Length: 354
Image (cartoon, rainbow, N blue to C red; front, side):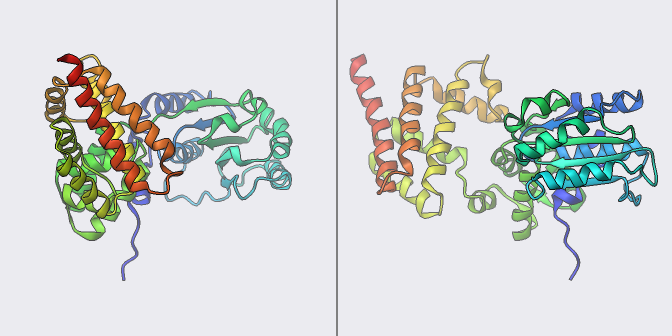
């Protein structure tokens, strides 16, 4: 059996040019290294799966002019703050920093999920972080910047990573498909990108899951295996609501739930769909969606029949359902009642106009 390497590792960026969606940050880091102006304490903050640790490794290699396959274990140290979050762990790290590197110019310490450090560990780290030895660089990474004490933040140069946009994720997935000789449908890759919430690692994990089933990625396969509902199903639901077709509406809800879609995900997805309808009503806001031009045009046509106030009412009803979902004993009834309330609100609005 051949050793399988997941795509998130196989296609991990090895240079700043390969990092997706963080151009300002990578340019800043590259210029700082080239001009010997890189701070000795750096904080990378942002959502999961957007390239924080990858950028930290690239910085570590560039500082010492290491190649990817260099044996740099004596220079680059990666620590997980979740399992080394006490004062003793930080004291051991501080003791190590006193020893100069055996090869290269710098010892680079990459501390992941640094917000997990205890208050005592943060305090023990303060002096070293403020005045580290000349041969040391600290790169801290976190998804929860607000949990880091201000005295640590004030000693770091902070880089805020953002979510990767849908187009960049889709383009990257297409490049991988080309390399791996995998056939795909554009809509399928867009659905994977949408599901990943701006995290490239999540997108690649979903991609691997689908590819393990079949070497052809279709929208149908993605929908069936990612516990998600596609936009065309939401459009069909909207049509049933708007036409007051309650029997078909209830049957559609039942079909979705029977296919294994969890109720809270369905409610959240429908809420997001109505939000996308809202922003697609106007050319000034349609760029706030992630859909292609064809789908946007279709959504825009739908919104001609419905007002802003109605869409806001729909989202408010769905928001209440999301809040009450976990507390509900009969969750299926809650979902059905929520959709019937939305249907009823359209009927009431129609009577007001007449």
